Length: 418
Image 1 (cartoon, rainbow, N blue to C red):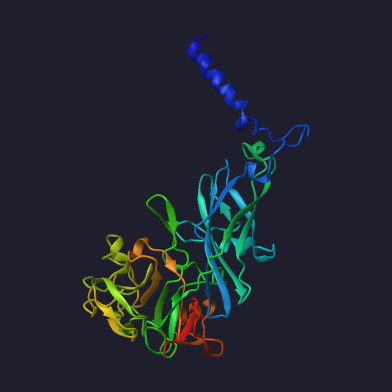
Image 2 (cartoon, rainbow, N blue to C red; image 1 turned 120 degrees about the horizontal axis):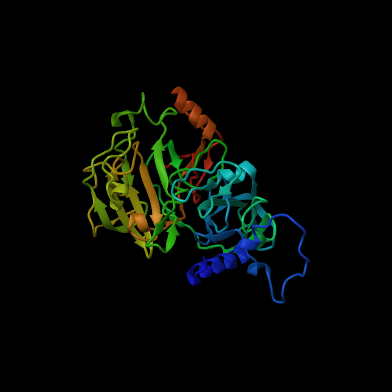
């Protein structure tokens, strides 16, 4: 039975079937004549399966390994009809030289969920209508930091993908974004702790190291105000202290098994206290935190010290009742401000230290810093760390000690902070 309504629905369905999406359903048959593209068409005008953006301009910091590290993330969104496989990522200098190239398992290792921080299963795949982050760490020798970086991503889609004609082929390449490197010098600070054996258990900037999973600092990203993704802890360091190769005794299930618990925490520069908190209890080691109920709780007991315009030192997870300073107080470099604890989002005693661009811990951007003076005692490999912890043995530190001053202690490096 013919009705105007049914006719309209059928006409609409036919229109959709013969449109861009419907035409792409045809994956076989004779090839269409090759007519080329209309005048003025460029690569940037062509449909792609992915949308790629960057979280920030690359921030640079000289690492304890002697290299300059450039840090940012790429956010990759799938705007196609099927999952899209990433086959290669290349980061090029302004001269076109390849500074970083990742394929296969190496690319999958640094391709993560946006907040979950878990790497994807090789090959690196972006789910349909989903997104992933690619964690970028470009390491170059001192004096060879480029002014710009261009990102190039290669990808593939299945040959039977609906709407394949929209792309024209199963492989694609996206050139961009091109990013200007932030060439500001990192902030120079004094050590936040005293003594030798302080290991960066979580921190910047090594990513994709064999055996090293994503850590809660370099891989932390979340949305603010529905407008942008922030990297709140890129250069944050979780300090634990090795004593005779161990940072806890026995099974580490109680606070008293961490000998460095209660260590003095120091002002890294002259500054003014702008925020303190001292009322959160310590958490039980090796157990999920139970007192973190809202954003401000993540840092636990804390002190925020203003060092200058848009420069704040944040000390987190401090011992309850140990904060010895007050808002408005001016501190001198090296002054004791609290003691190391286990409050907030913490599963073992440590000092979480970071330089930020604003005093609000949860909404700030992490900024690069270097420490002066200190000694680089060596590094711990992920394999040795896992093996030592599993066997209850001392953690081996490799590499000869050397001056580390005016560099950033990288993740799993061990430092004598004087």
